[in-house]
Image 1 (cartoon, rainbow, N blue to C red):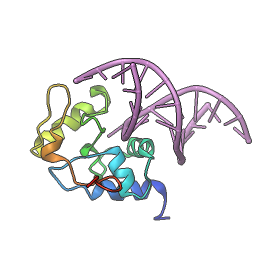
Image 2: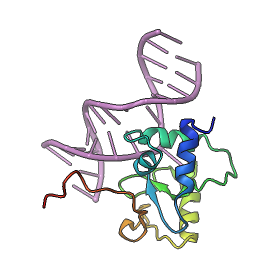
Image 3: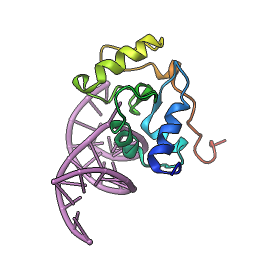
Image 4: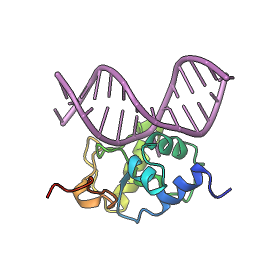
Length: 111
DNA sequence: GCGGTGACGGTCG
DNA sequence: CCGACCGCCACCG
């Protein structure tokens, strides 16, 4: 069924435009699964090689690549760089410049 | 059916 | 800035 959790997650990931990144939590929200960021990572881990899903645009909320270099983190870094996204030596991405807008203000912006 | 595990997130010290 | 803790829930043995 197209309504499976994984399909929703993959669809949300596909919605991230080139040159932008989003966190696992952001994807969970876009997929209508708030608070289930772990499942996003799990779903991405299940992707087959050569998938058209842009998994490399997903990073953790610390703004860093969450995947060990040997496990694909290096590839992710290369792909991001090819999209014009700068990745620091420590694996950090400049969120202020590339974060895909998904964040919301908390209820009542205090004002 | 139970318990451990994990490409996470938010908070606290 | 960073590590430790806890909460979250699907997958697997």
